[in-house]
Structure formats: structure tokens, C-alpha cells
Image (cartoon, rainbow, N blue to C red; front, side):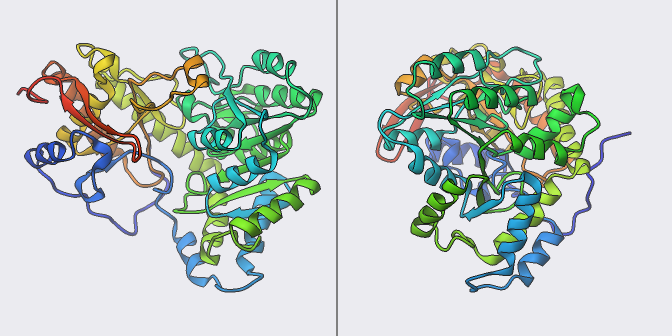
Length: 453
């Protein structure tokens, strides 16, 4: 059957109409840094899939009917029941977004000398751990081209690390799917083995469930013993191997804001409740409005439907196929996002001239596209990053949920074709100015002109 979006469109958001000449001038004014583009200067915003989804009419209706200002809002109990039924965790805490839960959880556990091991930890978690005096260390599996589960943690290295750690002086966080491993999923077999290791060493195992529903569906279609199970049943089993989960509702739940922490630990429940009351507001709303709690509950349910997840994963895979046909070198198989090797895409530009930034600028000039980088030229300067360097020549393309259609993907593929056809005409980049206080970076073309047409 041909690919088809499993929804119809009720409301439209017109794309900006900006000419190529105008985009070239805009790029000059922002010093060749596409991260400084304003939203109305972009045709296709593929920067992130976080908080960018098109919400359903059920979500919008639930927001309108929510009661606000209550100390015991009905929306909390709907939220709580939904999380419990999906995860099996009995103690549920809403927070204003996932990184708030990460901050509170790490604050409870961390202390100087404490270690947090992960397949790959999100940048915010690393920074929080560092501020608390803890060490965050990534133990990613070796990336194997074509492997179905390149998001796995390296269990052998984990055991070696834990064998040198004082009992109770560490914890493990598995990120599902793994952002810094090209959006790749984690297998159920890897989750089980990690859980067994953590139990043996008497340490906590938590899930950063940023895209745990998508991870569940990847297990369904890539791990043969789970092919007859629903994504919902797989997600429930996944959670059973963890002591708790925290996640952002801006991804799988398809909301603009929100997050959650949930656990089965009574002891942790008490500690987390104190932290929520101190930093997020009352424990039954955690910094969120009642309407947001309703939207998250419905979004999580919709996002875990097999029909939706089939569309989501197939649209990502199809987008990858469109780009490959255009001659774009990708990390394969495609996971929760598309990762492009810009150094291979623009082989005439040496990596020290930031081919990813060059490609990003070219995509904006040619098609008004904004995307993301795997690494900022001025980032990753701590010891762990030197041990596990992340290449700075990769571009990440995210696909906002239910926001773009197949015709949009085909058009973006044509933009890539045009860029690749004249790639020799693009100049590499060099850093002209960097402000450490604001992390604002200005670049300039190595040649006098960015593109010689």
C-alpha cells in the first residue's frame, strides 16, 4: 500500500514566501549562523521535533474543558491514570518539562564523586551533573552501519566501570531513543541486561524516555520476538526493568510543554515530592496548567497507537530514502531523526572549515530550511568528550510530528539535489567571533563569497 498520512488537516499554517536573494541577504546579516534565524524567515523548520507537533482535535478540546486553579485538578488524575497504565509506575509527578525532572532527580542522587553512566546523556543532564559535582560518562555501543539497535549501552564497559565504583555511588540512565547515537533505538535485550547489571551492583536504573514510545515501536519491528506485541505492551515491559522514568511531553506526547517523572519507589516518591514542591509548584500540577495536563494525557495515548507509530517510523524512513536518492549520505538505518554526514556531502570542504555549517547555510539559501548540528564548534570541551569525541561535521534533520506532508519531504529532497549538484561552488566557514558568555557564534566564508554561481 502506498504511504498515506493517517489524518486529515483541519487548520493550516502558511509557509513564508521569501526569495532566494532575500535569504542570502538575511544570512549575511546574521553572520552565517542559521541558529539566529527568526521563525518567519524559515520555510521548513527541521531544527527539532520537540514541542513542534501538530496537536489533535481531541487534545485541543481537552484543553478547553480543563478546570484551572484547583488544588486537586481533575486533569491531574487523568494524567496520573494515563502514566500509570502506560508505564506501570504508581507514583507520578508532572513537571513543566522533562529537563526539570532530570534536574530534580539528579539533585536527589548526585554528590561529589558520584557517577552517572549512560548510553549517551543529553547535554542538559551532563551540565546538571557537572554542577552537582558528579561525573556523567557515556558508554555507547560501537556504531555499526546497518545495525538495528545502535542506541545500546556497552554492557561490558558498564560492568568494568561499576566494578571500580563504591557501592551505591553511581546510577545508570538509558536514553530512549539515543539522541547522540544518531537517534537510534535501544533493544529490549540491552535493557534487560543493563537492568540485571544494575541489580547486581545495587544501583538505580532510570529511563530518559524522551522518545520511549518510538523506541517501543522500533523494538516491535526490529526485534523478532516482539513483532506480535503492541507498542503499548512493549513500552510497559520496557518500564518494568527500570526504577523510574522521566520524559519530556514535547516529543512522544505531541505537546508544546510538559514532562513527567514516575517511579515505583516509595522512598524516592517522598524525596521527589519535596523537590517538586520546592521548585515546580504543587505536586499535582508541577508548574503546568490543567489544560496542559489534559493535552499530555491524550497525546501520550495517541502517540502509543500502533497505527500512528507505523506512520511515524515509515515517514522518517521514507524521508531518509528521499534524501538518499538525492545523493545525501545518511546514518543508517534511520532512527528517530535523520543524521547527515556533511563532510561526505561536501567532500571539497575540510572538516576544520565546518562542512555541517556550510551545508546548513546552503540549505537555507536554496530552500529556506533550518536544521541542527550534532556538535557546536565551541562545545564538548570536558574530559569525557575528549575520550568520546562527537564529530562536528554531522547535520541532524528532525521531522516535527504530524506537521509536514509527503509533498514537503519530496520538495526538501529536491532542495538537497540542487545543493549537491553545485556543491563545489560553496565555500567553507571559519569562526569570525565567539562570545563565551552568550555562546553566540559568528562565522564568515573562507572565500570572499559564500556561493559562487
